[in-house]
Image 1: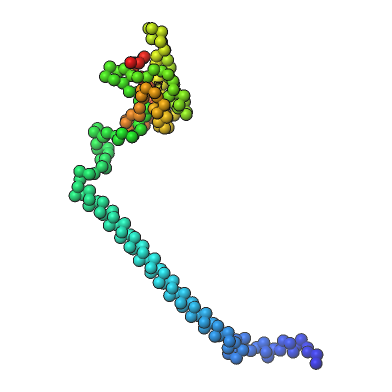
Image 2 (image 1 turned 60 degrees about the vertical axis):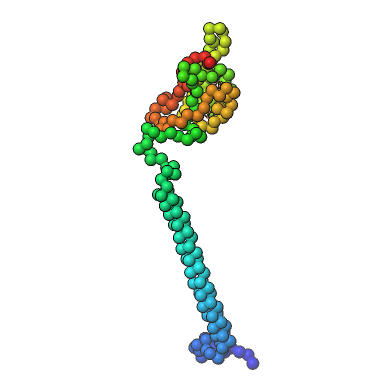
Length: 196
Ligand code: SF4
Ligand code: SF4
């Protein structure tokens, strides 16, 4: 029998509700199972969130008590406090041994230094911060004339100090060295010409 297009798309069939219980009984069972899985997933998610929350509370409390322990330890033992009350103690503050303020030349009580003007530190400096200008003494020997140090260029790398074979220079412990004029950051480190 030849079907017409009207039989294929019977208007009466099209008017039926698409999800009648008869035709979708199996699908509804699957939908029920999907809802159970969803409930279980939600419960797991809540348990996970609670666990994470409690873990963070425990971590926070541990951190709090650790910090309070340090505070209480120093409170009952103030002699161990190493915090500097800067700038109130500016006059008495002494920087630690390893502090690098800027390069200085070591002088004795008569303002003599050990620099021979050899120029090794000048060569060791990676950025041309140092200029060693030599002169001659009365006997015609080469001696240090001026030791020019440009603090504005210095990276405080310490290479010049490590390279000096005579221990003539070191890092100073001065601080608060900021100025408004760059020219003020160029120093002549030797107080006297020649050496000891
Ligand atoms: S500390 Fe470094 S950058 Fe500064 S003068 Fe010495 S070698 Fe040069
Ligand atoms: S500071 Fe040391 S390395 Fe530099 S010129 Fe003087 S003696 Fe030589």
